Amino acid sequence: MGTTSTATTTTMAVGLAPGLSRKINKVLESRTDSPDLVASLSTLSTFYSENTPQARRNLRSTIDNRSLLINRDFLLASLPAQQALDRVEEEVNALADCCDNISKALNACSTGDIISTTERLKQELETTTQRKEIVSYFLHDYQLSTEEINALRDEDLDENFFKALSHVQEIHANCKILLRTHHQRAGLELMDMMAMYQEGAYERLCRWVQAECRKLGDTDNPEVGELLKTAVRCLKERPVLFKYCADEVANMRHNALFRRFISALTRGGAGGMPRPIEVHAHDPLRYVGDMLGWLHQALASERELVLALLDPDAVVDTGSMANQLPKKLENNMGKTESDLTFVLDRIFEGVCRPFKVRVEQVLQSQPSLIIAYKLSNTLEFYGYTVSQANIFFFSGPQ
Image (cartoon, rainbow, N blue to C red; front, side, top):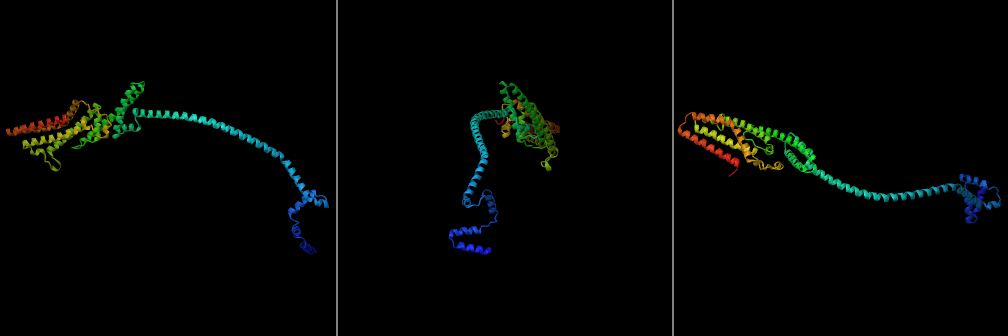
């Protein structure tokens, strides 16, 4: 029955106008059991009480009025919250304006402070830089660095030791300038400190030179290194210490020369060549001549060794290490000559007695007058040669 009614209705809708037909079909196709439709009808029943033709005609306006009433109630209910939000917005805007004003004031103040602070710090930096340079100059002119102190105290001597010692002497001389100012106390304290470093350095230098000089007695023809030359030249600043070293050289070479002379007399050279001098003892002229020739050659080598060690002119140009030292070349020439003569005398003191004994033995053998005359000429020749060599040695080339 229901199906027949729906079909009839559909047939009637088809015969209607197209627009009305679509609306009828839309209504017919609507689901009356949907939750939205049920909720809408329930709400409609709360204010749609009379189902009259007039009420049905005014249904749309009634729904619109109901919607307006609901919106009006919502606005009235949200008005306090809206007003509160407006007040909050006003306070936030006021706070933002206040912060802007404070920020502008702070920026203005900060800029001025920064400029003044920058200028002040710049001046302080310049002053500090100048003070730093002054302190650096002072430390260089009046203080030893840690490396220099270690160089003065280390057991091994090298170029750094002489540089440090030269710096000590410079500082000691600079302290005399302080004594002429109102910084006399500082000058005296620095002089005492430098004197302590200087004395300790010279004592170490003396011990080192003595140890090196002892090694000179271990070889027949020792070579004097530049470092030893510089050290001995430096010791000439301390005559007492220099004399100790000169005595050490004399003693070592004295013993070495004595051993060499006895070996040349009795054993000869290495491998038997040259032959021992005493092999020719039966020939007085050759025997004495060989001894004098050997002594003359030994004198030349020993004189060269002593010259390299003790003559200040021999160590004036000894490289960069010597250039670091103060060149006091106006030494007393007589004192130098005396030192050199003393050392050579001490070195040859040991061979004088063996040579004298053997010459006396030759003379006691009562050689012929011709041999005696030749021996006299030989002795006179070598005496003159040695004296001329010493004059050349002490005075330089004429």
